[in-house]
Amino acid sequence: MGKFFGLDSPFFKVMTKVADFIILNFLVLVFSIPVVTIGPALTAMYYVALKEARGEEGYIWRDFWKSFKANFKQGFVIELIVAAIIAVLGLNIVTCYRWTYEGSMMGQILMFLNIGLAILAAASLIYLFPLLAQFRNTVKNTLFNSLLMAMKHLPQTIVMLIATGLLVYAIISYPVFIFLFIGLIAYVQTYVLAKIFKQYMPKEEFIPDTYEVPEDVDDIWDRLAAGTADEKKEAEQEATDAADDSSGQETAGPAAADEQKEQGEE
Image (cartoon, rainbow, N blue to C red; front, side, top):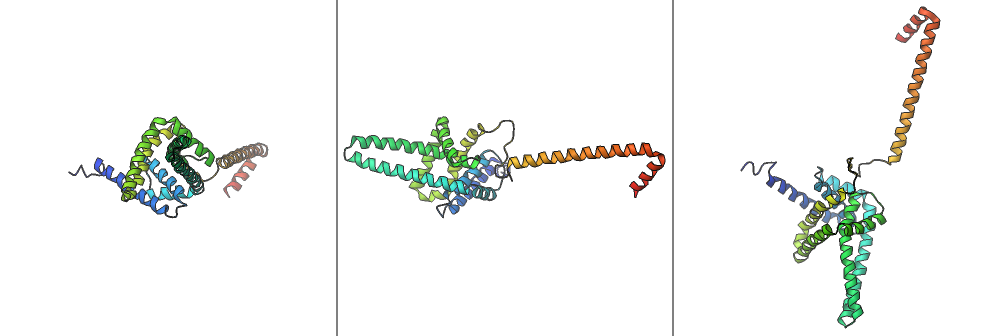
């Protein structure tokens, strides 16, 4: 029984994971209350979940807050774009459904076309905020890459769409699940996404936390280069001084050398 409840037992590890995504779920809900912060909150959620999926240790609150601040601007812009796409597609589907109900063949064709676009948008959305959490990029490139990955990794995309759809259906059917399943959705998706994203990272070097880089890489390189040049110049100056001292001692004789030694000791 002691082993079952031990710190290294499978039971304890599972309960730790459950506690983690409950806390993460709570943070997402609280930070999404202003509505305009939903995008940054989702990005921070995926940032924490991706670290968990890669087996990296960290503190949920600290990592969440760091990502929330770092990605606030881009997360907000992407949120507006996603909201606009949802509104347009939703309006188109409702309008086309009315035309179909009235017997319009064109309305039926357009409705299925918009439903297809909605599914493609949902598939892209699965990658969108995780990409923002994982990689530094422009909003335009992040949107394009999310669509590209959704199509390139189609089998994984379908699996995540089905799993996410079931969890969303559970939340709609039983709203109380919203206090648990948002974090669960992130964890389910990121265990697949972490393997996909690994393919786009350099294989021979460790990728550090993207939000711990304090300054531009070019600035760091310039400073290192300048420091190296100064050290080289200082070494050359010391060598020149040593050569001058040696020459002076040879011409002045032992008395001058003793005098220089006494001055050095003083």
